[in-house]
Length: 450
Image (tube, rainbow, N blue to C red; front, side):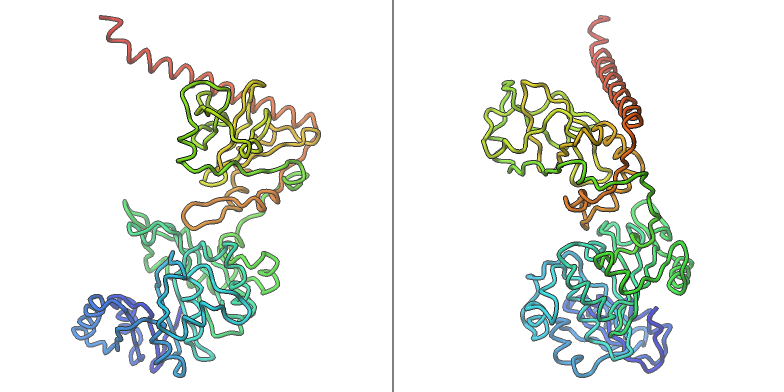
């Protein structure tokens, strides 16, 4: 992708033991290669490899931002690469360089980045000559999380991003299962972004996933032309998607929702109570008080379990998180998302956990069991998954949930689907009861027969 030419100046920030630079040296004769690494032990290995192979790579033991101040700021490079750390908080950066202090104050038209990925990406961009190119591996979460929208907007509007490639899951396993993207950066002037889905190109083994030469060729081919796995989007098209840079989202097929309306127009949506574990432990009791607490784990196969934790008292501040009969429950995080319709007797009060959304449905417009059936369907599950954000644990923001389109069919059609859904959840309950009894009978069998 970098297409390194003879005589070009190339830098690897955070070069580790020199894997990238040694590969570049073997393919790009006479390129001027340099690596910057803070860990002196790791760098010693890189230097030893270069000496044994005769690759003549220059190495510096330094903080990459401080090295930029002293060696790159007024002497930019043709090509740059970095497989930088993910998941760092920006406050973890050392304030030992002018560059990082400037970044942490916020640069030009965006405030301080939330994800460290964008600090590293900005370093790569600032290190390039006018016609230079950089490449890096970044976390998927930084491509679409809400807090980094301003910095993504700045990068897109200034033409710093040439392409985003969604990589296969597990390419860095067993060290991490964080999903990653390959980003191609320029010094400015890009008129749009090429989005490539390469998640299908990994070769899986027992513990990890690799990308072989055939897969690399396929990625390069997808970077060159539109296909089912590749699309070019203009700056205006990316702005219309709120500067979301997740490659897969630009390549997803549209889900047809008949007579679709926004979920927020047919239901009031509330997040459950965020109660600390210590507070909850103090409230839980063995006695049946008529007060219960619903955890995410108490929902399975479209229904709420009967045996919920009992609460000794109900704080008035928790009263507003009550679940009412017929409310639809959707898990806030985790995929696949859980869905259920609440059955709450008149003499009971159930409080929803903060990992749940409670949907108070307008029954004049939509049947709760019909709505639950939709979100339990492949299309409904996919719509929830597409709105999920987060690097490690995907979760759906309440704003995104409100905007999801749901089908609003006629009352007879809704009732038919709702009745069928209710019948199946009842059937599952009965089968679970039979299974529980059979297991107990199996346990008691020896003693009874004896």
